[in-house]
Image: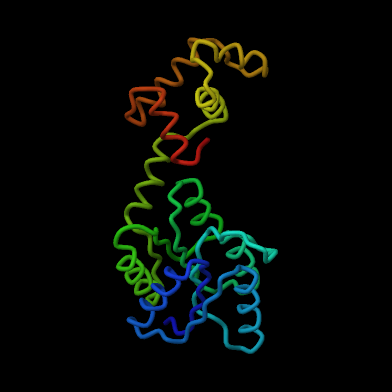
Amino acid sequence: MIDKVLIAEDHESANISIQKTLADLGIVNTDYVYYCDDALSKIRTAKQFNKPYDLLITDLYFDADDQVQQIVDGIGLIAAARELQPEIKVLVFSAENKPLILERLLNEFQVDGYVRKARNDARELRNAIEQLCHNRQYLPRVVSDLVKHKDSHQFSEFDITIISLLANGVAQKNIPEHLERRQIRPSGLSSVEKRLNHIKQVLELTKNEQLVAFCKDMGII
């Protein structure tokens, strides 16, 4: 059961929306902060008074201003909160959709839920909180699909290098020269072409430009 919730969100409209969703679910014991340092301070104080929070809802990105912060983003807050109170549930509410970051949240920090800020996010948020109340993890299908799509090909360091060269404007025919200069093997044009073609086939892409765009969107490069 979730009775006490802390919201870390620096956008007032999102903050209000989260509070309303919680109130609609009958969860009224809530606090909210606009800074990660303040969030950790509240978690620490609540634990000291033996009245810990059951759930932390946090964004991943916080706008910088004139107040200097030790913890500048949601990932830092999640790590610090879990170190201080390992059992606290964590729900991420963010516009982030890069699979590498989502994988890190799931595998390294083992967040209990993720809701992307987008259309119908109020409904998603409600569904997520209801699942967390029953000790179930909540991941919308779009998040699972993103991670699954990225995992359809395991990008090696060689893959990332040649795709990064393409992204930086290096023509495919000139990639071997750059690989030779960095003493990267294999460096032949045939190897480069075969690798790029293989990746595009697996990802169902047809052009190098599509591959570069995909890798940027996925956070691979």
